[in-house]
Length: 433
Ligand code: IMP
Image (cartoon, helix red, strand yellow):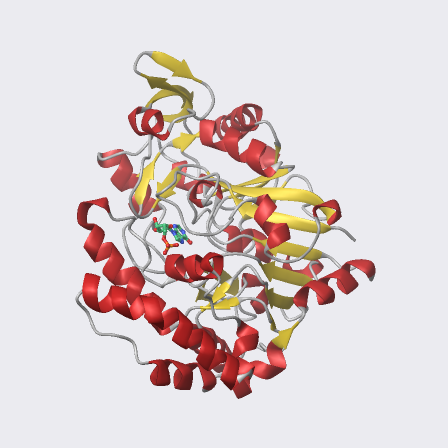
């Protein structure tokens, strides 16, 4: 069976966890291929007693909650080992079996000094800050590219680990002390901390690219799940207000070791409106009551940092861009229910930049900063849609909205989220063949 890629179409928090969960039973492997514990998946699962349990996952692939799935942390991920074991312990305490988890030997480790550097750099940048999650993501990817990173496999060779930590700290301690005026990291303590995870980590570590190749050859379903989203991608996002990894479909291959020729479908998650956390341009952002309405109704507060998310109307210029950059074959629209109760529902169809209409993302970032949304207004609906399970059950105006979005973004809408629960979704086309 071929591999399927799942990406976010906007600035993250589109509800990927829910889509993964929807496919859960039919998927054999779920691979996280980029990012680290900067992500936040909230997954709501209904227990046998009908009670809803909410899980907030940051590092682990959301597939970990499905017993039949083998969850994999791919080589493109940066792993905070303390967080890894905290999340595993948390799930075990709630009765979730996590024993199938595999971690790539080539994934990089977020060393404690990189968490420190992330925070002090943001402070140093002041008004020019990125608004990172402070988890050490950027400095760890920078180390990877600078070839001074620590990999998972290094944890099992004390001599090598020591050499690598010493090499990294030779420069970093100068920066920490002389530029940021903070304390130097002690190599001994860093090595000791990282080594303390070795025994627990060892059984999980594998050549995950090889495992995945065998799985595909055996006809298994492999889902490659992106952290963050298209506009946070380090190449294709709103640089520099992005994360430091490849969050688009191309990153699924480099971050997992699965070649592009084995990917058959790219599913993108598009929230029915737009949100963003952190700094950076956001053309449809609303600073008024409508923004507050979206934040409250959609419970738009960060899973990782608790920050209130910036909210705005749906922007299909971004949606079209996501289709193009990722080669999207199917969209899942999430949180359509949040738009219930509006007189009209605006969709941003193009931008006005200094009097010039742009139907595509402007080439220059400065133009994107000045882009004024051009809206198309669609009639709203008031009916509770959370019980709808087929497209035809949706009110006529909600159907018209989805069909118009589908037309504008240029790929079919295969599923529509109508509420937070696992089953509160309409499947128009199966996500797995
Ligand atoms: P970093 O990934 O912590 O370096 O943060 C870089 C930017 O990406 C900041 O604007 C973060 O708020 C944003 N970001 C990182 N992870 C997520 C996510 O899972 N959802 C939404 N935004 C994110």
